[in-house]
Image: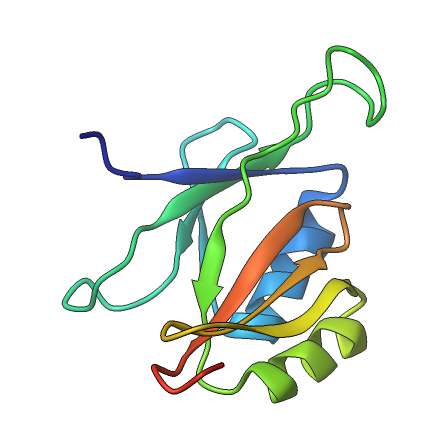
Length: 127
């Protein structure tokens, strides 16, 4: 098996995307070298999870050469509060909260760059 070890967010406006994720889930962004690339720090190294990167999008959205990222899911403590924060931060909820039985509550949203991401609140009693 191969595990996810890194993710990348492709953004039309990297500063806007960084502001969105900082406000929404508290991620930190650190410029990497001289190129237009920022490391995404998603949490303490002692907890499960991965870090990633953010860069300007290559190609225009809707065009054949546009880079559209994989959907990554973010673990949250309170999905209802987070979904409200998505819209307050300039994003959009694209799939409403629903149960994944015995796993938790799940929703999809879009960031300010049109990238889809998942949000999951763990709850083994979800039905």
